[in-house]
Length: 171
Image 1: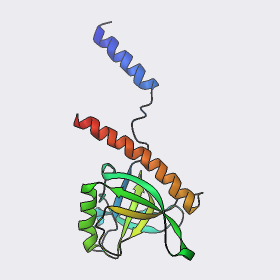
Image 2: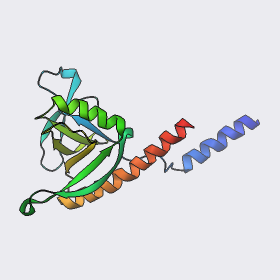
Image 3: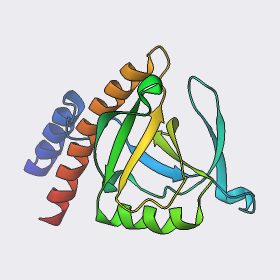
Image 4: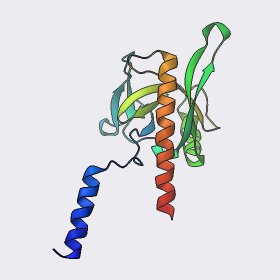
């Protein structure tokens, strides 16, 4: 057996037996609700897992996964009506894209999607200028607080892995 064949065989065995832990399990993206005038091929319907609210979004994400810096749980609202939300923080490019789109999209919604499944919504009531988005999230079998904590933890792990991949590509 030649050295090349041996190297290929060993590589195949190593790859088959090892799982790369640097690849994120969950890829989050933020989509914007499609306007009624959008063409059929440019939009798709997504449905939240608990409330079953259906939202028609554009097929291309407004903010891809690599522009999400991190997340954290946040409680907001009047003292009697406090709720937990997922704060999603964007990098500069993502914040600029959101700022530009939300100027004209007041009344529509942003939708947080993880691995092709909608998990959260955020109504756009004004232009968003700071790159901080607060999503109401849902996950089957979990309360609002548990869903926020779980999704935040998992997305932070994925965001870190995505940043490491981006840094390695720059080298």
